[in-house]
Image: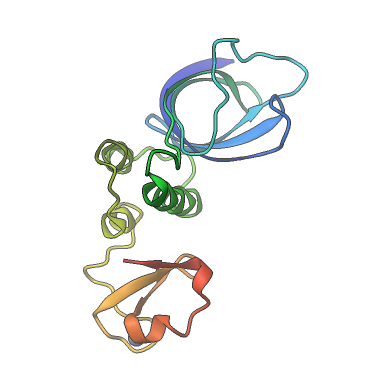
Length: 177
Ligand SMILES: [Zn+2]
């Protein structure tokens, strides 16, 4: 059994009961990982706030047969209150992309700092994010027509599109750059 402490941002979670959840985290030390927060034993400290999507926290993780969240200390909660609705919505897109496109268990200091910077500045540059995830916009061209003026990225197919061609795509998974 090994124990680790690392900083993390919560990408999302599954499960409804407070002590029976599976969290997707992007961590400073290990990159993207999935950790169990198991039922039965209430191992989370009473002082720990309940972790939610987009929270930044320091977490203690125990590795035995799988990874278990043993404790957490929330550093900052990003919410849609206080006029932050647009930033919060953009942050949720960031977290969804990181969850889908970052390799599991591979730390990336550049991506970690990008996330911290976005939080501090309250601004998100999707082009820079895609670069960190291995989808550089500079050399991209439209998947349909070959134009170099790409303005959209499909999260579903992981392809770039220009203004005209992205109009033909189903809108819900398209990221406008
Ligand atoms: Zn095009």
